Image 1 (cartoon, protein in one colour):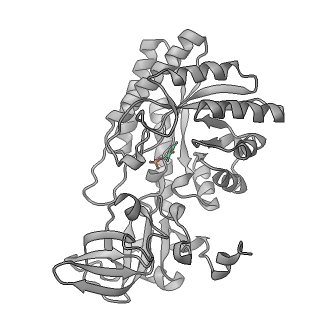
Image 2 (image 1 turned 60 degrees about the vertical axis):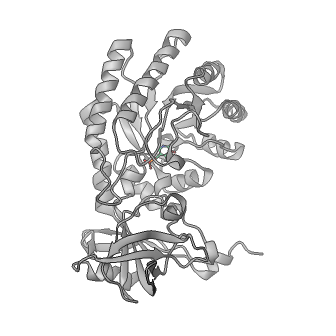
Image 3 (image 1 turned 45 degrees about the horizontal axis):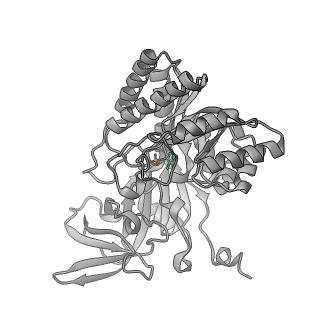
Amino acid sequence: MSVGGVDTVALARQYGTPLYVMSEDEIRRVCRSYVDSFQKFYHGNGRPIYASKAFCCKEMCRIAFSEGLDLEVVSGGELYTALQAGIPGGNIHFQGNNKSVAELELAVSNHVGDIVVDNPSELEKLEKVAAAQGVIVPASLRVKPGIDAHTHEFIRTGQIDSKFGLDLVSGEAFTAAKRALELEHVKLIGLHCHIGSQIMEKEPFVHAAEVMLGLLHQIKQELGVELEHLNLGGGFGIHYTEQDDFIPYMEYMEAVSEKIHACCAKLGLQLPRIYIEPGRSVVGEAGVTLYTVGSIREIPQVRNYVAIDGGMFENPRYALYQSDYTCLVANKASLPADYTATIAGKCCESGDLIQEHTLIQRPEEGDILAVLSTGAYNYSMASNYNRNLRPPCVMVRNGESRVVIRGETYQDLLKNDE
Ligand SMILES: *Cc1c(COP(=O)(O)O)cnc(C)c1O
């Protein structure tokens, strides 16, 4: 089995396991198709933003930006990473439902292009921070449009019962827009929504676009201001297994853009500058994690535990959401997958599993196990639980590999200990 023209078993031998492997070609291909879609459907009036929380490191920020994407960050740490990677503040969009004053100060002093305000109290905080620095900051409002996307409840964000954003239905979002327009140091530039993640259908996105344009129209009618930006968030589904069946990105873009063009014509609005904010779909399928198989425990009539040298400390997604993954034995990839395995991590938790009852090639200790589609929300969710070391990440391109994140060492674990 190979990634980006490089044999995975050779990668495992060269860098050790566990190992995150990312195909740079695949990441760049997806970035380009997103940029191209804005030419096709909006005549370039808008751009994709890479939601860096899916996989955030300096090199990934540089790759996304070099392909023409802006960067979205949700914390001071992600903001700092993007700035250190050389991304201009003006190309950074700052999200998050509870930004601290220190984080707002960091964003304002670095001239972040769009601070997406989540709630009324944050709006007042931002005004104070901007006033103290004597600047006017561009900001938009995170709106919850009241849409239930059919996805896991932990990654659903557009419905009324959500910790994110200003409620549209009750009028909270409109009131916040009114308030923002009164503020001296905040320049309201647009509206934002993000309805969830790993969404397989296009209807919720089309509906969200329509609802958001309705609010844009109401703000124009009643407050006399036509906002110029509309950010429709991310959330496009990817393949974790063959069962994942979602509409191709271009079909989603086409359907949403048709709705936007039609609504703008009907409501007498200028076409706003459109943004989308994909994270998972930019990097998810580009990633593979490699492990070495350790002990195998076959419990008759129960299950076969296949232990690996990773686990929830480097991929907590199964433990968090029972996420599906495709697993295979990389050095036996051509053999039939007829062995039912539960892939177990090395953490001291029974729930530390990567997948249950999944079909793989019959494994032996020392084999290389590959888990596919691990590019998103794996490294970025990793921890040092049990004082395990976060693995390195290598990017492969044209048959060559290079380290973009070094693996941690035991000394790294102690660097903040007194
Ligand atoms: C997480 C997030 C995204 C990206 O979502 P994906 O499902 O990874 O595409 C975009 N926008 C906001 C505000 C987010 O919180």
